Image (cartoon, rainbow over all chains, first blue to last red):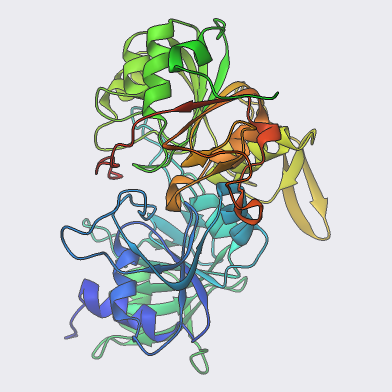
Length: 219
Length: 236
């Protein structure tokens, strides 16, 4: 089997492709932040940041940073015309009240039925930190995960049952990986797309779980 | 005449008791009440419970309070940062207690305290390790309209320290950009709220349509010199 993994930018572009005009979206810290670079500029998509920003714009030019205007990763950002500021309880009401359309998060593991593990390795000496991950995972209308399919040791991060501490149960709708895009459902994983050259059998072997093909890719 | 302006941080914090629960605003670089945290350090109250999104960076602010041994417990959502080594070391050696709370529950528990709500059911955290009490027992859960929820209690403060932008002698406040974050809800949730402002306004000078925190939630306002917010605290 010969196939190439999606690069981080190709993966970000693949996620961006599925975000419809008019959506309100929260991009998690780390890799999901890259998705913003691939949203076509002619589309009006509102980015939400949990520290009280809706309509977040790109990083300002060097020398124009304002550290009262930062994203959840604490990097300087800007505000688009029409954007707004609000306090933390309102910001989390946007997630928890089901107003946010999509959140994109990283993950340690996702189960076939959409359980998410992304906040804690569970190691004894690790300092636990959760931030807004549980609120986003449970609150957004759709929770998407963006991650490499395999760990550095070659083990699938898509699993039958998460071994890491859970962030949320049955909350992940879709998983975008470097090798394939899959949907999680109560009846298991369905494949939305795969990188060229990768067969369903190859993918099923890598993941170690039964896979079904999704009839057509939902937008 | 109502006059909530206080001449100095020291005067505003003089009556802080040992064992107080102190709500401290700020997220990342924005809205951290540096002058008030420094004031609390000088004031000397100990055995404190701090409520903040994080657990301090570097050697200053919250980290300085921790390092000085003044903190018994921290209630926060994201203690782990690239430069949170003061907290990390105290936590690992069991010298400070941590109550880790999902950020939305943290915000809503603070808001609930300010609104007189005795608790609420939230879907966040259901079925996870954070749906447990500090003693390890499971928090109360309930199925509501087919969805599972966890019972969460309010977080009251004895004192709230917040950084605002502008204020008047009745305690009305505005905030700047994302420096607002926890400020308005913490102001509601504490018996005593002390806010710093960079600008003092005369009564009637602030547009009433744009007041973010009405003065009823604020007990003391201290004017401080404006300092540009600096970079820092990038999440690990």
